[in-house]
Image (cartoon, rainbow, N blue to C red; front, top):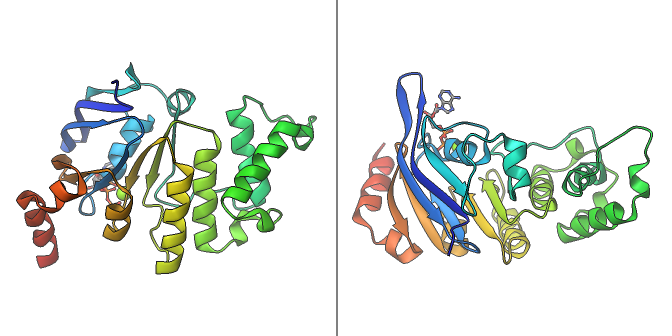
Length: 249
Ligand SMILES: Nc1ncnc2c1ncn2[C@@H]1O[C@H](COP(=O)(O)OP(=O)(O)OP(=O)(O)O)[C@@H](O)[C@H]1O
Ligand SMILES: [Mg+2]
């Protein structure tokens, strides 16, 4: 079967440093795949390469069998891939409702125009309400997003990422900075919202990784040193070495 994401021999050079080195990764359709690795390993860079925010220096990336490396972010998005950023990325002055509506409008092909009252489009209103119910933020619909708690902002961002109905969802450290209880809530949310879709998640919290992922890839210095089921990765001596090396510092 065609992989959802297929990365072949990708390199990314910044200046004269190869940040991503011979990266090969295949994520099956419907799989939940976690990318883990030390700070600065190149996890976010990998996300940027897949989503079109960066172009590979060499190599090829496919989405559902179609080459996407070299396309711009909105073009990759149009082909069914949606991602969130490591740093919260919501419109602070817009209300929760407007933030989600914006994503819904984009997904349904509507373009914002000041002379159109977009709230009068019934399918947009219905879908926006549905997403806000789903992410448990309907009671906060009229609050400017910048006034939400940090965890609520992250949940809103997850909601916006999935609002477009993309088949492939990529989340970069969605639970970073959350309390234990908030993390559990967010994981339940992610699990529910990505049901039947492909998920690629970057995460430092190992309880989240091992609780959510079908497969895990370990990225160290821009190269995947191990890839497999949670059990395979847990038992891999190369992984232990990389992480013990980290702990020693
Ligand atoms: N645009 C850029 N120009 C130059 N160097 C960059 C650029 N973006 C990232 N880097 C470097 O690439 C390396 C990988 O960064 P990246 O953000 O991908 O790591 P990461 O694995 O996501 O780390 P973290 O766990 O801290 O989020 C770092 O050394 C970083 O400084
Ligand atoms: Mg990162």
